[in-house]
Amino acid sequence: MAKSEAGVQSWIALGYTLAQLIVVLALQFVLANNLAVAKTFFLVPLIVKTFPLVLDAFWVNVKIFLIAEVFVLIWGLVVALAMFAPGNAGKPLRFIATAYVDIFRAMPAVLVIYLVGFGLPLTGVPILKDLSLTTYVVIALTLTVGAYVAEIYRAGIQGVHWSQVAAARSLGLSYTQTLRFVVLPQGIRQIIPPLLNAFIALQKDTALVNVVGVIDAFNQSMVIASNHYNLSAATTVAILFIIISIPQVRFVERMAKRDRARMRAGGA
Image (tube, rainbow, N blue to C red):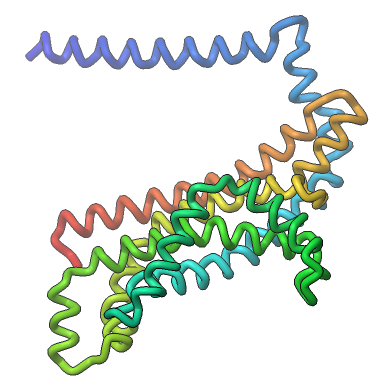
């Protein structure tokens, strides 16, 4: 027993030692080359001076992901339902929805933003050619992230036991009523954690809008970096993304933990 306890204590000591070693190495890297690393990434006077500019530009990122999240939520559900279109009549819809998901999951988000942001204005199609750059970015992100979210919806819907569907149909509910009152309420509850994870990824993807020239926080930080030959403004952008992302990550983990506990307890 004493030997086992000593082994545990040794592993704990090793863990703390490794953690201290990592912290020391990180500090040495920051202080390396006569503080050159620290001055390049963490020049406090420049961070303070440029913070209002970066914060204003960051509001563009916030607006984009807030609007895009609403459209992604709706569009992903539409695509997922199309993937479950019943019977032979629904076969073309199922094929188109599956092809869409496969294609847009395979394409990098930055490429979709580039194609939509520069392509739609060149088409000359009324209304579409006159949209703002921010709107083009929202469309591109909706198309890209919507494909992932459709898969999340699909997994949630398929996660509902077939007996639930059979019971609903035996009670006389139509296919649409079964989806609306039985499948979707249960399926959506199961997919909330992965859905929130997709939205966290969407928030970070808003930094790709610089491809089409939208002045967001990252683009603003690049302008500042060019003017001052220093990357501290980009550090400010990173900190802002971290500040808004970490609470959501913890919230998702908490929900996932609660779901696991509910499943272990045999809850629905």
